[in-house]
Structures are given as structure tokens and as C-alpha cells.
Amino acid sequence: MRTLWSAMILACVWVPSVSADTDGSPVTYVLADWFPYGWQDNATPQGLLVDIAKAVDKALSVENNYAIAPVSRVLRSIKSGEYDFSIIYRGKKLNRQVDHVLDVGCIRTAVVSMRDRPVRKIEDLNGMRVAYSSSGYFADNFLPTLDLEGMAVANADIMFRMALRGRLDAFVIDDAVLQGYRLELDQARKETAAQWQSFSQPFYLESLRLAVTSSFDNKHKVLKERMRGLLSNASFVGDLQDIYDRYGLPSGTACLHLVDQ
Image 1 (cartoon, rainbow, N blue to C red):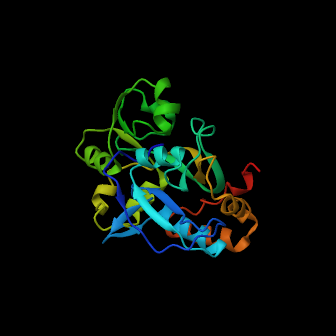
Image 2: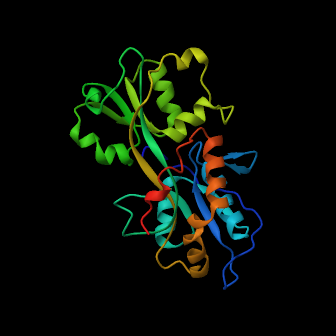
Image 3: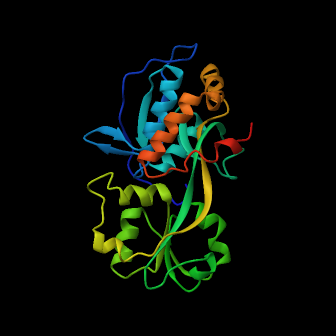
């Protein structure tokens, strides 16, 4: 995905299901195994996308299955229809391949640089050693126009370690990942106050839109149509805002009024 998500071994967690669709078959979300979007805590799925999926289910008065998987598997399985729904970033490459059913928020892409060489505009990255996701938004939209020493890495944990060891001048993640570390949402992923002092204030690129997504031939037609109407549900939008607030992303719902209908 964007500045997110790497290929790892598929790990699934299941919860009891009550289908909301007319065919009575179970409905399953496959969600990215990438902190803080999704991760396992004692075999229990956690994360931003899990909470958003649960908010959708709550608004529709249903309970569904959840699977946690690497992004590469998420994208393949949604395109093929192996799984029913996901929550992924919209993108030009995907618009003709999948059906974005319901926009659920937007998150900024962040350039994190070292304090002694802060990035204040995109051109500041020229000549730097910069880490990023190999198949993400930055690599697709900015990297071709820059002259830098770039390296694709597997995850944000590696980016933080490399930067603190002096092997990077900057790295590109998104605000959800940055805030997840700052808020210490997972005790296994946190930096000390002294380590945070090593970094400059982030430079933000564009906001990217998250959407509940399925294949175009998804059999759960009734459920998809019910989802499409949720943005007119004030209680649902309020639940989304509460979720983003908990993850340190108060502007997470700011783009919803811009959704294409």
C-alpha cells in the first residue's frame, strides 16, 4: 500500500459471525497486518482497521469475521473475491480493479527526518538517505522526481531503528503509524523521550482516503448497499471520529464531506 505494509506469513483470527446478507453465508473482512492498522495481541486482532470494521458492523447491527493478513495477500484476496471486504487506501491503480464501497476517513503521509537535517519541503529530500515502502504512495508519486539514496524496507520498526543508528536521514510513513508509536499503542513498539528528541517535526504530504472495499462481483449485494448509506448516519460518523481520536488522528473524518457519491 502506500507507505504501509509488507509481505509476511498470513495469520488469521476468527470471531463468531452473523451474516447481514440474504444468502446467509458468512462475511469476512481481511485487514492489513501492519501496526497500528492491524496486529495480533494474544491471538486477538487489534488495530485501527479492526475498530473501523467493528464500527461499520455496529451501525449495520451485524457481527462479522475478521482475518489479519499481509498487504500483498489483502490486495490479492480482495481483487479475486477470496475474502468479502477490506479497508484499504484508495489509489489510481486500484480504482478499476476493486469497488470502493464506503469511505471511512483520510490519513496524511508523513516524512520523518532527523533533527540535524529537517525536511520542510519535498525537495529537501534530494541528496538524502531515505527509506520508504517499496510499493506505496511515496514510491509511486514522489520518488521518480527526486534525486536521493532510497531504500525500500519491510516495516516502520526497521525505519526507526535505521534512523536512530544514523543509517537514514529521513523515512516516509503515514500519520497513523507515527501516532501509533508516539502513543505507545503497542508496548513492544515505542521509543524513549530521548529518541524522540532525535527527530524533527514531521513534514506532511497529501492525505489519502481509506475505504471499505470489495471485489466488483462481491455476492453480498444487500450488505454493500447498506454500507453505502452509512455516511448519512450521524452516530456512525461520530463513532469513526472517536476511533480516530483514540489513535491520535483528530482530522481522520475531515475528508468525508468530499466523498464522491
